Length: 312
Image (cartoon, rainbow, N blue to C red; front, side, top):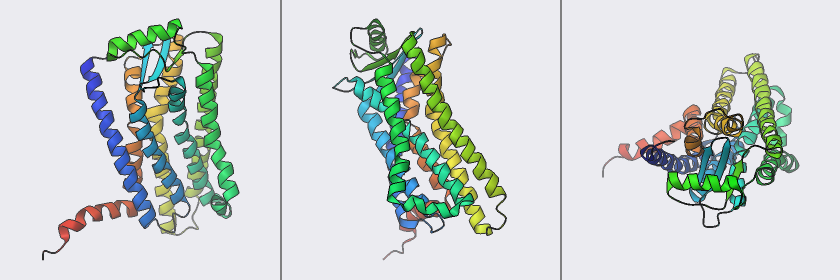
């Protein structure tokens, strides 16, 4: 178990990232609207959707105040709200499936932009947009139902009592309700397999689309040097954006879902997990701002402009 000092420092780091996440993604939304090149095309709308959702995740994290704890082979997650509701906890967990679904849409756009450019007009077609929006929405609904119905967490269950007691010892607050917990039984084992299948499918789609995009950019010798350079930059950006939630969310998710079931020690992962989810929205914005020159230049000029104004 981590010390109280460690948890306090971790909470401060998480809060700083939450504030930075809101500010940086709001700034990113501003520069996307102001300076996006025609070469970026409809892709700017995908970047904008991702930035807006990152702001939502930062606010959600602060409002829900999630916590996680592992006792033996039992894992539990809870949100510290006045309602103490399992619905809120399940909603919070399900929301973090959406960024990876959006990443796969990003990869699809990048693949079409280099291989099937005639298909890009679909991203301005309302029916296509509604259809492709069903992918992240459907993944969210499936994950929510799996968490809410597939896991336990009723107030009078032994696992809930065990986890809430241990949580009170660690954080000094007794939360009797709002828990989703995972111990050892067939229903939870099948749920665990379902979680793993969803993550494996998402990763497989990202890897396939990313590999195809890389292959065709490398072979795109007929493109102008400027267009090819832009393709590389945007491909690197979406790849880096995929790495961030993978590191901060999906690897810890995978470990927490699977390791306790098999008695594999997690050390401080349960303490760090919820705080790590608070960090990735800020780094998402940093990656896009740093890698896309026009965005970076607009922001740096904005900072520099007041200093270079002539005195009157």
